[in-house]
Length: 485
Image 1 (cartoon, one colour):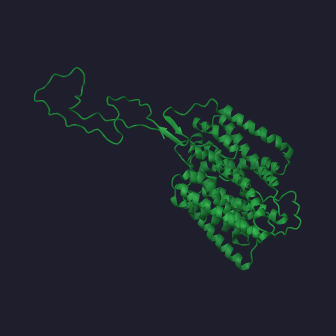
Image 2 (cartoon, one colour):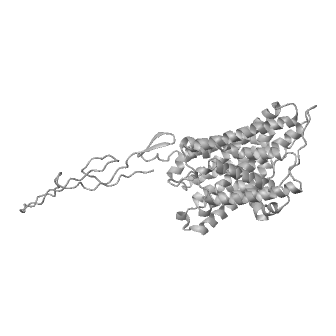
Image 3 (cartoon, one colour):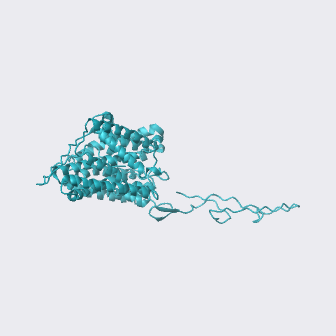
């Protein structure tokens, strides 16, 4: 699912010097908004209900789309306000803050998954998947790895990978790397004045949004997995948030009449999101791209309403929602391996009781990780930047070596699974324990029994062995062909 930035937008630690002679825009201040934490809580709750198997939340995976749009809005707000103040964007400082915020928790989750593999929690197919999932997750390219492997999100034919949810984290990390570079180029060459440069950025961002939506719809006709996992096909949801950040750059709090309109639009958007979560399915044709675009638009409306003083903000600022929103990144990271670990077979539980146990374990672990890992790393109390430059490569090597060591003795796939190409697995007939005297027949035609010969008028001596004349009786029934998908 998505890299959920669970705290307020980062304010750059050092102000970039103002460029002499270059006019700047006046950007509205953007501080911490507890209502946006409440929106994160609603989004992660939808994902939890979806992975918990609640029938009424068949579209809970759209919580990831909500995170995409919210992340696009917050990240663009940070970058654009820095540019409005100083006419420059500190790329190194931005990436440093993002990596401190996200990498420690995600790499710790990968380490926990490997430890659970050492404890024998994952089966052979899940251990085999970790061989490739771990390095690609570390490289923040897990979504493209799943596309090449032909992974189907939410498939139930085989146990899913404990790192399958890292696909959304990869998309957001790629977005965090590319968006500031795009804005630096566009805003530097977009025109003579800051406002003209901003208009040029809107045109470029709008064009990219439309192109991403078209790619999503076209590719979904042949492969929903490609449309679902692709960075290019999901970028539209993030770019909607970026365009919203541009629109709100000069003013966050609206006047009385626009505020009432925004709150009404946000209410309609919230109701629509609830309806989408209840009716959408991963295979719904209307979802690609129209359902995803509608989700992004509704999320944008809720964001604007949440930033105003009104009923929407009061609901999203409820203490339980804000508390869950603050730890939502850790909740998303940890919930998937916890859900795969605490199965009905292991716990002897099912239904709401099992779901409550999974949630309790996830929340406890997420709170611990937020307190003792995420916040200390982010505030540099645990690791300084100079130490991080040494620890990051060492941690990556340690995880890669651990992955190879833990999965080295995992047996290969069954011999009747024949891989022809990545994402294309041919199935040949599994060995049968029952032998027949007949050879194989065409899978599209069935043998036609010949009419039985008339019964003899005189009794014949009993044969010494039971035989069936080949042309006087119907062939013996064939056992069905057995395959493994």
